[in-house]
Length: 165
Image 1 (tube, helix red, strand yellow):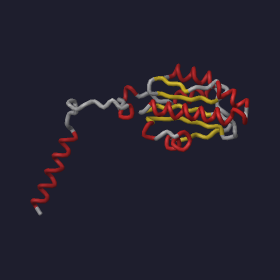
Image 2 (cartoon, rainbow, N blue to C red; image 1 turned 60 degrees about the horizontal axis):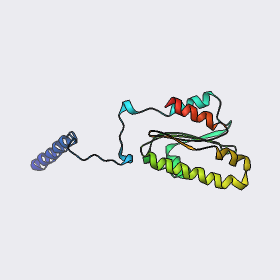
Image 3 (cartoon, rainbow, N blue to C red; image 1 turned 135 degrees about the vertical axis):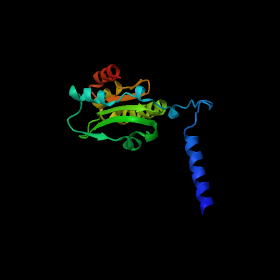
Image 4 (tube, helix red, strand yellow; image 1 turned 180 degrees about the horizontal axis):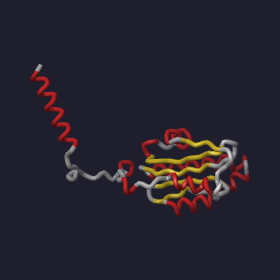
């Protein structure tokens, strides 16, 4: 029993020392999804949404989506997201405000571009006025920050996005 306890304690000590080891000799991973951020590099997306709300640019009735909801609505894996702030109009109009700090920006951008094209195709014949709004929208990128503003106020939201981040 004492030998088993000594072996167990030795394994725990070795594991804790290995966890504290220096990785400077290892190969750097260039995959965007493996990018890590230090606290000084992190800028929250929430101030962007707060400014959009402060200027009353949101639809009257909306729902807020969580990062876990993004897979169902946009095909965006939660592992690709550091932080998100997403609002959709709940009264049937097409307004969507999507701001994402991405750990995998190219995958998030691609998913949002596919979503925008899908919405355009759906609205082309169904609702010409919604289609006209969609035609003016585009996926915005600023570093690891990705946004899509589907709204009559998309131009102003885009300005806020670029000014704030």
